[in-house]
Length: 366
Image (cartoon, rainbow, N blue to C red; front, top):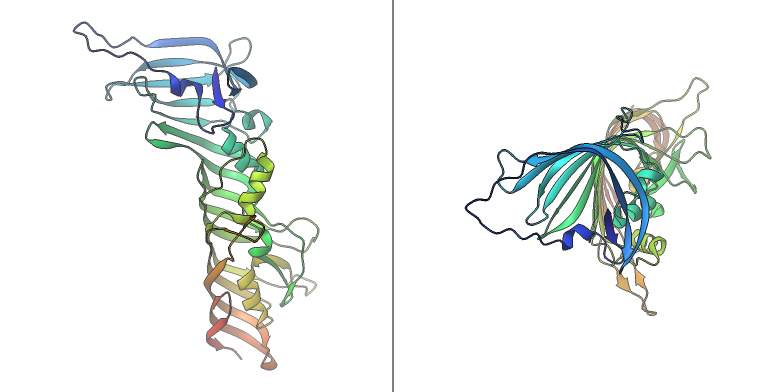
């Protein structure tokens, strides 16, 4: 039975075990232990009260590590109620454990982002899962803990949908036919590769690559290929009795650092001559609108940071104003500059921007 303290994220029942390891002239390494059929139950406890959340039946083995004294290697595979191996999608776990200190690491594969997997996760991962509205599957989950480092979980993703854990209106804008237009869309990221790391102190998005697509109220919105790195930290202290409110507070106030990269993204008119709409970082959309650009190829990098939250007059925490910096390279575009309202074609331009201004390094066109 694996149980997490309901009021202390990352504190599990096994961490309180204190095996008595005493040197002995006759001490021998224990033999390999084969597990034919066992049930792993997981849940949370509040004091002495345990609430089970789910279970999985497994088989496997535990044996002394060949090249790491004091460490043990374990391997577990999911089985069905009859003791037979589960399907290819069944959970597989392997890792290392130091029984003297309880330091350990493990890698789990075969997990779908479904309710059964959700209840297996530590509470802080559950909160992050809900905050980002994760959907899809992960290729692996890596978990590590030692007495002197925070508990951490890293999800390596290859087919996942998620929403960035920051306030959308501070970051995204809808761009259509040369203009920034109003939208209530909360863009979703479809991730093809990258990882998500969660600790009690931070949420990190590491090299997420895929497509960004607005929500489905506008059929003409197209996906934008991106590479994103982000860190949301430090997170406010977890309120375990009000997890959804905690997630909302993190979204509105926690400091973050986000980098967004687009490489050689080309937009063309469809066969009816219409331009698609797309969701972009706000400053990029405003920069394109400066020239009412259509039919273009874009490469851009954007850095958005938000500092520590402050208290307002009522004592409530208020998020700091985000600071944005970036640049955009535009090629083969068509548009009109506000101060030169004639159609320009074959536009090449380099723009630099921040919260307050857009600097035009060069613009060339015919």
